[in-house]
Image (cartoon, rainbow, N blue to C red; front, side):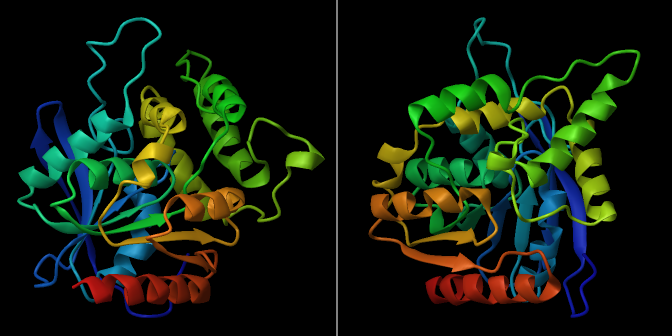
Length: 292
C-alpha cells in the first residue's frame, strides 16, 4: 500500500531472550508518550503492521515484535513437549514480555490482531500492572467443533523437500486466506468477498511466511487452541474490542462483546485503502489517547 500522507520512519532491531534473538520494528523511539506495543496476526510477521506503525509512530513510540517462530524471530522452545503436545498462548505471552523487558519497556499500551489478540489477552490477564490499555482488533470465539477442525487443517507443519513444494504450498495458503474462510474449504459457501491484495503485498506476506516455514504453525495452533472465554471476562484494564468490517472474525464480534461488557467496541473500515487505514487509526487513537 502506498500512503500519500506523512508517516514515521520505521527502524528494525533485535533483542535477546533465553531462546535467542527476537526481531522487532520500531518507530518514534524518542517520544515521551507511553509506548504502543503491537502484536501481529498469523501468518506473517510485524511487517504486515508497517502501515499501522508508520501512522501511530507520528505521535508515539511503537514497538512491533515478530512472534517467536515468525518473521525474523527465533523459533520457540519446543524441547520439553511430549508427542502430541503443543505450546500454549501463555508461553508466547511470557516470551513477548521478556522481549519487552530486554528493551527496557515495562508499562505499555497493547494492540493485538488475530493471533496477536490472543497473545495480548494473555498478557493483559497475567500482567495487568504493565498494560495501560488493551486494543483487540479481530478475535475469534470458535466452537468446540470449529476448533477441532481448525487444529487439524488450518495451519499444518510444512514439509521442506528437494522439489520445493513448500514454495507452492505457502503461496497457495497465503493467497487462499483472502479467498475463502477457512482457506481450505474452497467452495462458494465459504468464499470471501474481499478480493486479493495487490501483488506487492501478497509477495511480502508470502516471503515472511517462507522465512518461518518450519515454525510458523506453532503460534498459530496455540492461538486456535486458546480458550479465551474465561480470560476475557476477567481482564480489568481499559479495553477496546474492534473488528474491521471486512474481517472474517466479524461473525464472532457480538459474542466477544457480550463477554466483555466493560469494554468499548467498534467496527472499523479496516486497512484496505489509505483512506480506510487513516480513518481506522483515528478511531483507535481516540481510545488510546484517552488512556494517557
